[in-house]
Image 1 (cartoon, rainbow, N blue to C red):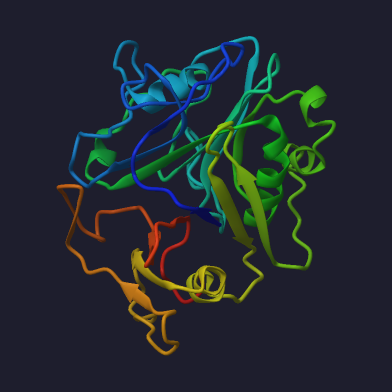
Image 2 (spheres, rainbow, N blue to C red; image 1 turned 135 degrees about the horizontal axis):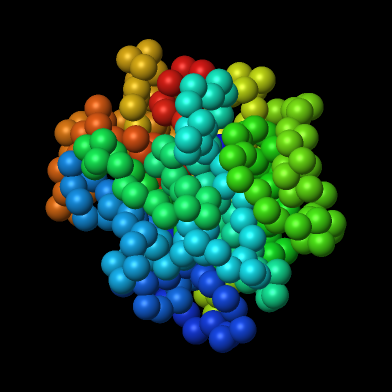
Length: 299
């Protein structure tokens, strides 16, 4: 599955939101609401490590406090191809994320990430020491509940491993795709690719997010046949490779350029061997694409 954020740069975008909202994405220190948030943790770096203990002042710790804890009005669905406490799960999905909503207000958030075994539902989460050596990415989008059904439609194609869900039927009744997802009805029928669009909740400057999905039945290369085709621009790709797909410069102004490893991101050293993130940026432009599949022939 591909997540494309239009006209976004890697900063926290602050907005004023109603006090009736129970939770949203948060700024870096966790103290203020945000329309969206992005955290990249480079390999072997502690900065960006997700610490969910009280008082740690972390953006995602605040957003997920009622996922690892409890709140009567906060319900969520968590999916991860490496679910916590369940070893050796067989799946072709690589999707990881959490859909969180309030049953008391039009308040929701979608968190997409790359961390195995995260989060632990209703259980205090401890960052595993083994993951400090790895590079990880987390994205949070503050949304209205009306956007959830489009997200669920995209996830149906990705066939995620859902390891926790307590969203009540009163919330899913008007969302047919979310209802199918929560019931595990992810059988895929043609077409095997889809595009959905959602918007963040900011009243003044909402961010448009395009979600591209394809099932394992699709033979499309998501980088060439989906990302470049949609953007109509050259893209720079940071992703693990299978040594079969190379940079592609056959179509002018629609090149696929592979970023070289090792590299430096915002002053942090990184390398593809230790980085679990896959992403692309448009060139020129300011479009960021998070992809949950590496740059392999069958991705």
